[in-house]
Length: 196
Image (cartoon, rainbow, N blue to C red; front, side):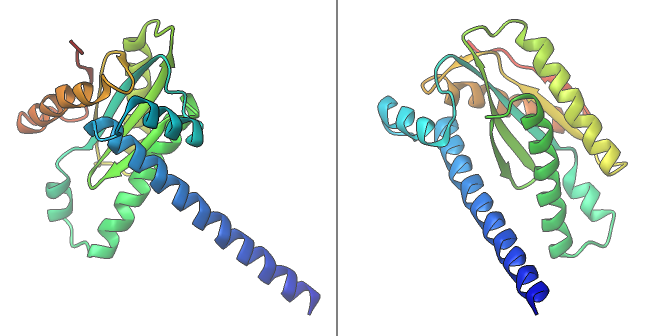
């Protein structure tokens, strides 16, 4: 009886922890989307939200976009249910988040259907951001390839941008680059894009 009760308590605690983690992920994702779309309100409001979430808003940041290459083609070539598609997207997000957070523990990460957006805090010394961004992109690409052979991603990343004002422009600059890669079928690519 005591063992059953202990198992029940542990199961409930695990469920509560997962629920809290999901809520925190949603709140962090909403903040990221607000930053990347310029809908964060005032600078002071963005700073308050960043402090609340433990995200270092001061200094420079890199916007990173990770797109699944030819997701429609991948799904179309297989008989996959909607539940399986959603599970695939969740696992893709989990894997990208794991790789990003292994290098940038406080990064903001948000899934967007068949892509992931991330904001990487590089602080006041951005150093060789291209080498670091490229290395992280290669790690993400390799992790996804190891997980699901034949399933590839392309990764693009901005130059250092100031937060919060410069982040929307950094993302706007990157979206056409990623779209161009998809149209030209330049898959499994990792590349920077400049920020003016």
